[in-house]
Length: 136
Image (cartoon, rainbow, N blue to C red):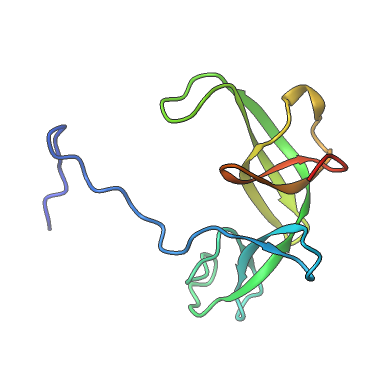
């Protein structure tokens, strides 16, 4: 068995995601939507896109659009971070494709409540969700 120990002087290499998370245009309307994958064997959808189904281990998943609107499941304001400006709002959003996404909100926490409809928007960092009906 290989030695998997490491020290502070030689930390492990970070895991790099081979398939970047992308925001795409849905139906050519220019409205941002999330891209994910769908298993042709069991029909489960996933985000971000995957090569292998986490449910049935089938490979060869299809790229699909997961939509641009979801329901706010839970959220919390983060006040301490070593890698980004604070505060920011971290949230779970349920998409109609039976996928729950961990994301940031591009609006203050006092503007939303659990159960609100939220939509994908482009941001300087890439994408986030905001309360539906807000500015794109």
